[in-house]
Length: 397
Image: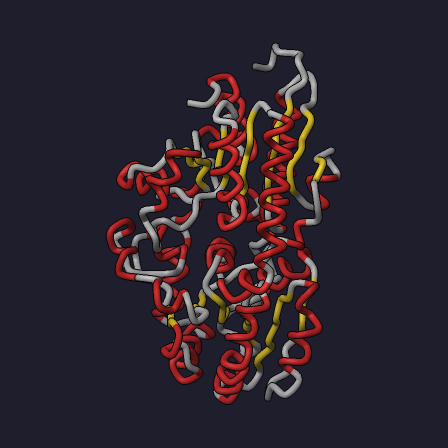
């Protein structure tokens, strides 16, 4: 493939900021492997644009989560889906890569496959078929030729469910783990009196709205038994005003941390965390920060999500990524009404001292590196690029 000097056209469709980051790294890896840089089209954000990607519209128009939020913007999202499909079909690229945001990207992929079946389609980041709606795996095999998984257990899950050929390419957090782990002196000894608690209510407005009050009450209970407590609250920039308003009446005022570098510094300093369920739990585990996890679903997903399904694929019933990867319920988690201040405080307090609960989590976290590492020191973006280029060589099935 690297000997082909023809300029390729590769469509990359991302629907939110995390997808933009993955897309940018993929573009850089593809450019490094090809004599002539491809033309990149589709949808993406600033990081992809900086590398030459031509986006049809700002991804902020489609970056929504949860049925309630989707419904409120459905006409615009549907319009953008059809616009993107038309553009890709007209361009007839050598491959289409869809990145995460399945409600948006997979609707595009299905329509492109129907209208232009000759275009190879690669999915980047598997939907959580191991958590709910497992039938999606088999349906994906119709319109996804290769799937790039960022969690090590996902290839086996898709094999069992009849999903598309799935390749574990590593998780982006694994490649940046050094930025999360403290150097000497950054994290105070747990035996000392001063303790630092991270509070992570989520990166989406809906998550913050459901968890911020509960976390505030939990912090008050923890502080009542931890006199010298520092509370750090990393916040994504667009939610900072809302979070500042939401915490102004907290008994213990948190220090808001905005920006990736300051967030990573907070992880390196923290002794324990109170976190929403999501990728941040894996980030904390890789940083060596014990945690308690909570999640409150919106009214629709509360009725359809079936946690018992997780037992089929991971050996544990859990919504917490480190638990699933480790196949052990080492991190306590609370869902919906069970996520209350009394329960969360009870589990968080032992993590702020040298306890058996704290040591058990830290010991389990030490095995994550080996489980998630790619062979031969390969990079995530490099492994992803190799699969995309191989699929371009093979064409669509």
